[in-house]
Each structure stands twice: as structure tokens, then as C-alpha cells.
Image (tube, rainbow, N blue to C red; front, side):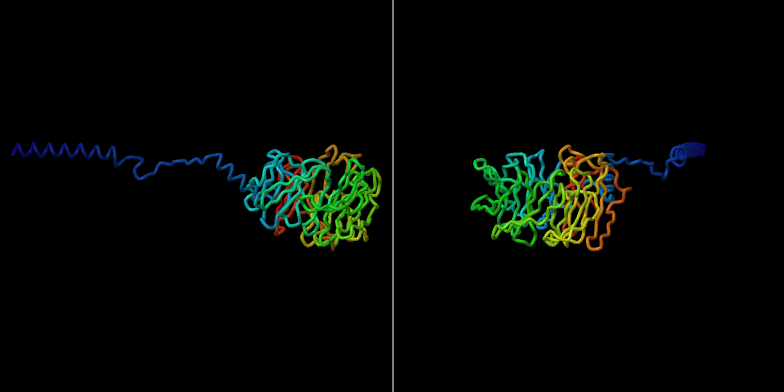
Length: 379
């Protein structure tokens, strides 16, 4: 009996010790049934990138391609932007959906500008003032043209080019029609000005040409038929003028001044024959404008921060003079103008050029002369 009592007492003591240990270490554990609070910290670089992308998407005006660019244009076939990259000596392409550029071709020279054919399949690339190269986008081949070609443009069909040619032997300047590679050329008129600009007239067999805008001389706008070579002067009233033809070939947009050596540039509209001059009283340059496809809406940048006493357009291109622009559109039928970007949404200075619209006319692209990068405006 005594032995049984001792065994029972020992077991009781063991169970008591176990019970005390359990209560102390497990049952009263302050972390029992709880999950530690763990803070997950994302990579700050990834977070910054996400924030920047979101901010850009929400901005009315924002960077689109953050590399130096020039000669910006939209291709309706590929739904992409083409531009020259002086740093890479290349023609670059970027889809308007992604904004991710790729190199189309690298040139053996630094390209200065490019003139696309109406179809966008071929282009003339400027190497120097008198040296141009033909680029074929489908075959990605280059054909150097003869020296002496200046200010070339394309015919409406894109099967011929027209350019000014200077013959150093005869000292004569002529307007010449030729195949895109420069072959089978023929003279179609005289070019009496040393510095000449040319342009395709949409839906016409003629091309336009004029002396480069100079505030100290009147600008003579003329046309010449590529069929019979008969030149015709259609407008010669303003100084320092430049011209842009509407896509439907019905209107001419011009910028210029009625006073010699003035800074009071203004946009105006004319009929295709040079009649019906209508001052729009918009103080900007043709190079800061673009037409809608219908030819009804005009998009433009209105320059600010122009120093008092500036001579335009000379100082803008020669100094160069940098502007701070605001962005507008005009209904050319009603004459009504409105902002496309509120001043509160303009967070930096823009000096806009090379305006181009996408196919849906929902986005306006341009190059900022201040940093030579491509920006976009949601319309």
C-alpha cells in the first residue's frame, strides 16, 4: 500500500510539473494565434517608374520620345512616327502606341533634313545644301544624287521630283523636273532667287516655289506646271513669308508681315490661286502649324517670350531665338480659336516645330527646339 502511494505521488508530481511548464510556455504565449506584422517594401526604382508612366499617361502634354530628333512625320501606312536622329546619323521609327524607337537605316553622313514622297515609300535626305540622297524605304537602299541639287520637292503622284539647280559654269539657276534618282531631267523654269523654298501642291500637277522668308524683302509665291513648265506668280505682297498648303489643295496658309523689317508676323489664308487674302491676326510662324486632314482645322503654337525689337522670321532661325509657346486650334470656316492645352497643364517651356497628327487626329506630336525631343498632346 505504501508502495502504491509513493508511485501515485510521483506521477502526480510529474503531471503537475508538466502542467506548470505547459501553462507558462505555451498557453500564455503572447504570440499564440498571431501573425507577425511584416512590411513588404517594393523596389523604389520600380515604384518611381510606375509613377512616372502613370503621370505621363494622365498628362495632356508629355514627352513621347526622349532622344534628340528632327524632321518629324507620321506615316499612315505603318501608323508610326519617322524622325532623323543626328546623334546616331540614322532614320528612326517609333509606333505611336508604344513610343519605342528602332533604327530603320544608318546613313554614311549626318542627315540634316528629309523630304518624304506623298506615299511615304521614298524620301530625299539632305546631306548638305547642295547634296541630297534618295532613300527607298521598301528596299532600304540609298542613291546619291548629283551635286548642285537644292530645295527638292515631290510631285503629287510621287513619281518625279522638282528642285532648284545651280550651274557653276553658266551661273544660272533653274527649276528642274527629274526622276527621283535624278535621271531624265529637264528644265521647266527659271529660279531667280539664291535661296528658294519649294512645296507640293496637293491634287495638282503644279508645284509651288518662293524666295526664302526674309523680313527685308518681299516674298514672291509662284507656281509652275510639271506638264508644260509654265511659271505663274500668284502672290507678292508680304515680307518674310512662308507657305503651307491645305491637304485638300483648296487653301494656302501664310505667315508674313506687311512692313519691311518688322516683328509683327501674322498668319493669313488665301485661295489656292493667291486671291481672297484673309488676315487671321494670329502672330505665329507657318513652321508652328499643321492642318487637319479635312483642311478645316488649323493647329498652331502661339509663341511668347520674344524680345522687343526682334526681326522676324530672321532672328528666330538665325540667332536662334527660343520661344515659350501656348497651344491652340482654329476652325478656319468659323474663325473660332480655342486652347488645346490649358496654361495650368504647361509645366515647362516649349518652342514647338515639326507638328504632325496621328491617323485618328487624337494626338498631336511635335519637336521641342529647346531640347530637340519629341512631345505629344492628347486632343
